[in-house]
Image 1 (cartoon, rainbow, N blue to C red):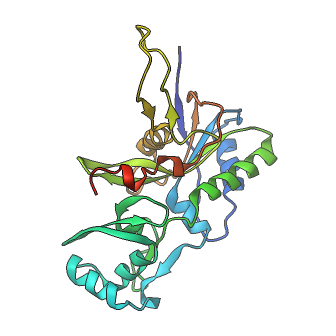
Image 2 (image 1 turned 135 degrees about the horizontal axis):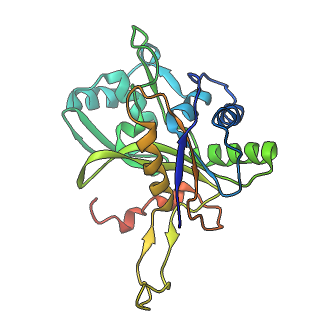
Image 3 (image 1 turned 60 degrees about the vertical axis):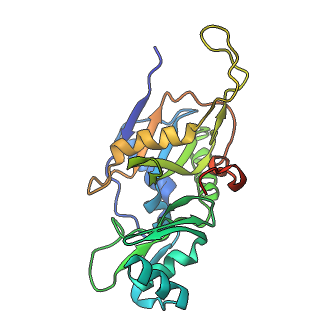
Length: 254
């Protein structure tokens, strides 16, 4: 019978800039007594990838622009925080008290351009925030190649983050970086149980893996940022998270 097994890798340290994530993953696999196999998937929380890549920003070092000051007045947020949001923003979609929705340079439509304070650093006078990776697809590809070089195994890598949804309450895990598996799987032309050929069905495969992993990763103080998955029905195609971005001309709600 088909089976999907998810394991949170143990003993993952607090990640610092420049840490070797491939080495940390391999130690975690060893501690979990897991030998990597082809088609396994490693799912990493965005925060640890961003931290290794030096994407932390200290707010006291930020000078708000006039646009950030205006955005702060509209949203009630710290103007320095708004300035960091603008660094990664292609377009501001909506603003109200306590909420800024933007389209990022990566193409994601999300709150605060993905800038976050939680699980970033101790809350003190420094007030650190964390930006998304500059190119999470590239980060996933590089990590996949490091793991292949170390183990000879061809695995998938997903970098996930928590995003809200326009028409449903509650945040879920989504893929923002993908390597070694499809971002979106196209099932058009395949038969259903009764022989009908699917006409429009595409599946957010990487998002499904990302969301499943987030069940173990948690959102608070769990400290489980790396998940190993075995048994996912991976199509043999090397995709990318950019496949998931809906083109603006096909977005009926903006």
